[in-house]
Amino acid sequence: DGDADRTGGGAMSMASLDGNTQLARATTGINRVPLVTVDFWLIKLMAVTMGETAADYLAVNLGFGLTATSLIMSAVLIGALALQFGQKRYVPWSYWLAVVLISIVGTLVTDNLVDNFGISLVTTTVMFTIALAATFAIWFSSEKTLSIHEIFTTRREGFYWLAILFTFALGTAAGDLVAEKFGLGYLSTGILFGLIIGSLAMGYFFLGLDPVLGFWLAYIFTRPLGASFGDLLSQPSRFGGMGLGTIITSAMFLAAIIAIVTYMSVTHDGEDPGAQA
Image (cartoon, rainbow, N blue to C red; front, side, top):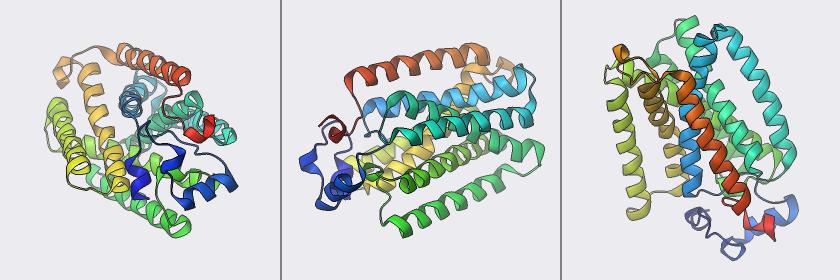
């Protein structure tokens, strides 16, 4: 899978796929998730930022509370995932709708455990680390790969979205742990996780970091990076933020997400080349 993963940008072509991947495509269809391009990381970062601020807006500003907000958004997420699974291919608007919603629900899961059930951020961070590791272990045991370039079946897509949910919940817990429990604040926490992601990129491009490992680590750490800057923009100055509020911050990032998804839909950026064959 290494060679296929290293071609994770738009340059990946049918000729670059190994025999097993071509056989899987021939028998089960095209890849159902996007290739890893610059646009992928941009929209993912914006989605997680919006997930943080939107969850706060629904639960606090609209007064729904954590429990009601969690139930409502979980139901909406289930509907969005049903729509996504029905596509049987990568369709930008349905895929990224699911990502935005799962970002919100992942945030709410962690917030519920901490605020409603009194579970510490240390414990939730450990819990979700174990849950994510178990998901990867079962996924690999079943499918013999964790490559996102080979999400050809419903079972693999199920593993994929479960892993995504746990990365958001884990990223929320880890980000809050560093920013609040360790007292680094939003800006310093964002810079810290930005440096970690930068080191992963250096490892991938120059030191031979395994592409599958590098991808999932970066996916985890973009969650606290985005959440930290979302809180920095939205929270009042007395809490160390810039005071833009959750409405303005969420609207800003939602507009940016819509613009990039529209661009991706028009240009086919991130699509499996087999989808256009």
